[in-house]
Structures are given as structure tokens and as C-alpha cells.
Length: 265
Length: 265
Image 1 (spheres, each protein chain N blue to C red):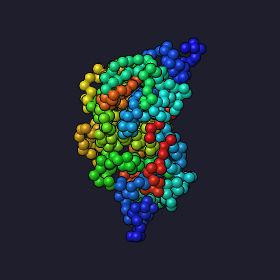
Image 2: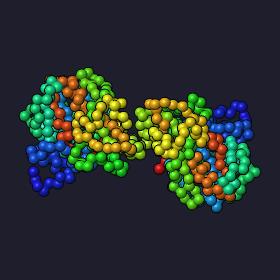
Image 3: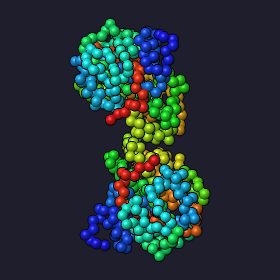
Image 4: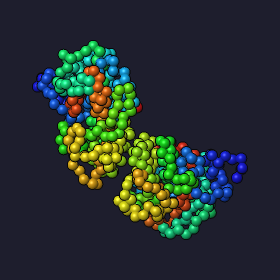
């Protein structure tokens, strides 16, 4: 990459990833700009999956889709995005089974592929920060712990399954302020689905997240849980379409959209 | 009163009270219209008390003051309000001591009296109801239980003291929705100050409220606490000015303002 390019700009990050100079996780990159989980499906499965996202807007906030099957651009989310190269790492799933993890899918691209971009939970970190609630992570390039809860998403066709939630420990007053922040900002993933006893939503051990690293905390902090877009990854794996491509967890598309510009209906 | 007058209109309620036909509590009257706690002070104390309200806007949301000392109207809150007669019951406090409870203060009116009208917690009941969270009261003419907490208001001059809170039992999901309702409506008293263990804010026994009647409930409901404008009553009693007049608890001024039109900054 051009060493003069600023890594504080989303397009510079995408250029670095496109050039093959970086294939790691994107947490903590260009704070304030939205990152997306990406799901790519053949057109045959696209309508049902889109309907699934619409019926599960709390977990699967759909920010953008490609303009037509075969298009690999997402102009709504950023200049010159090429989804075949701009995600640091992709997972290829055949009939729901992971067959390969790659950093470029140009050779696999098909004329019937449709792209779905879902807002990650990271935008709400920006909101919380702007409301004076800091991230519980000592290192911003790490990920929050995420857990497969027993809360069910709304099934649509073959798509369904459990909600994947992330956890931030908070004091009661922070929780009250966080719900205010989610309500007034209307950023995706802003309203918690649960707080307090993890067992009430089917989480047995906070020390063993399904994704990300555990966070140690103690009373008076409570665990508070918000949905994540990994719910969509789980739904796609479970539906086991002939072929789909998703980003590897925590390896997201960095967009040009400001976190605070994301508003859910 | 005119028997043809509709008791669904605030001005009909005020006319009935003004005529001396009713001197009871106003809870549950004309739902959807704001009710106010009223405090009347000599001009000598007015500026400091107004400053106290401004520094404690969460507990003491000041909706209106009289236009000048001696005026007994509150045109901002309703047509033809005469504060000397339109509150069902008044308490006369001399040096902080209750000396008399009356239903008309015309004979006591002074040219230096200033009126303060604070939004009661009832507006938020309307908001909760519109968000699908019903009142915990079986009878809408009853009052929520209220407690003198150990949370301190911000002192200004002689005014200060503990926050008086009301309690509604709620399930966790209702609490999350209630904070959303408070955030997006921005109605006074909409954001809770505490939930869970009452002892954490100095309340020893939920069964023995300082005002109103207790509410029985059980897990999974939690007690949730919001401020009330009785905080201002307590502050005035504690400051013990030469003379002040307040409404008797639960005997409020019924205004022409829609609950949902009340917005805090």
C-alpha cells in the first residue's frame, strides 16, 4: 500500500486489505465509522434471507444489499467498495460446512451472488463512548465476548435459530444511561435484550464465550446483553444453502458511513 | 357545578373544584392531561427556590411560574386558572410546620406570592400506557407508593434534602422498554433513578411508603424507582420559610396541557 495513505480513513483501510497487506481483525479500526458483517448468497436464497433480516431487524439490521445479482459493489456504504477483495478474511460454506477460509474471493465470484451487509455491534460502542460510557475492553482491537443464547430469532423459510448476543459489564446507572443512549441515537443493536442472570437466556458460563474473549468483572457491575449480527451467520449455517460466503467473525467490512448516521426504524 | 359539564375536560374538573364541589385526590382524573404539584412562596424566597428547581430538574421539573408576584393565574397551563381556588386541598406551612389544611386560599393571598407548578409523575404513566406498559394500580384513582430515599438533591441556599421517589414493579423487559419510553418521549420523571434492591437508596421497607399505598409484587418483577416532585415539598418544609402554601399530596392542579406535550431539555 501507499505508505502515505492515512489509516484514519476507511478507504485507506480497504485499500490496504484489497492489496493483500492486511488480513486480520478490524475491531478498533477507524473508530466512528461503521463496520459490517457480510453475507453472500446465490440469488435462489436471497429473497428468503432478506425477509429473515426484515423479520429480525433487532439482530440483523440490514444496512445495504447489492444493486443486482452479480454486482460486487456497495456504493451506499463506500466509494469503490469491491466486496470480492475488501473484507480481510472470508469463510466459504458449502451446505453449511466451512470448507475454506480465504482473503480474496475474486476467483469464486458468480453472476448470481447477492450481497447483504449488516451493521455490527461496534456502532453502539461509539454511541456509548459519546454518552460517557467507555468500552470494557482494555485493548480496542479486541472483541466483546459473544454467546449463543437460547433466545430464538423469528424463523423465515430455512432461516432461523438462536440469537447471538454480546456482553458488556455495567453498573446499574450505566445501564440506565445506555438504554437512553440506544433510544435517542436509534443506532442498531442499541437496546439490550437482557441483563443480570445469564442463565435466564441460556448462557451457562460467562467465562466461555462462543466468540471473542471473556471479560472479568465483579458486583456492583451486572452483565448486560445486546444482539449481534452473528445471529445471521448462525442462521445461514443452519439453513445450509448449497453455497454461501461470509466474513470471518471480527473480520468486517470497514465502511464510509459514520456510526451515528445509522438509524433503525 | 353545572351537571352538564363533562368531567373528561380539565376545565370542568377545575370548575367543580373551584365551586367547592370536590376536595379529594386527583389521581386518575382526565387521563392524558398533565397534573401539577403547586408551591407558593413569598417573593423573598422565590429566586432561590427557582434556582433549586433548575439545579434539580430531574426531581423538580418546573412547568410554569406566575408571570409576576401577586398574579394567581397560570395561563401557560390552562384557561382561567385561579390558583387560589383550583387546587382541591392546600397545606399552609409556617416556618416549615403544617398549620392548616384548606380548600381555598383566597383569604390568604398576598401581593408578593409567586407560584411554582411542577410536573407530577402521572404524565409518565400516560407514556408507559402508550408504550403498552399498564399501571400497577388496580384502581387508577389510587397513588403509587412513594418513599423518601437517601439520594440527596443538589442544595441551593436553604433548599435541599432527600429525593422522594415513586415505585412501580416491573419485569426486566418492561424496565428496558420503560427507559426507551422515557428517552424518546422526554416526559418529566421518565428515567428511573434506581432498580432492584431498595436498601441501596435507603429504603428499608417497601411495605411502608411515606406517601401512597404499598403495592404487593413478586419476582420476576423488580422494584423500579423514579423521582417525584414531592422532593420539592420536602425541600420547602426543610427550608422552613416564614410562610409557604403547597398542595396536599395527591391533590394536584389539573391542567389543559397534554401529558405527551411535556418535554424536558
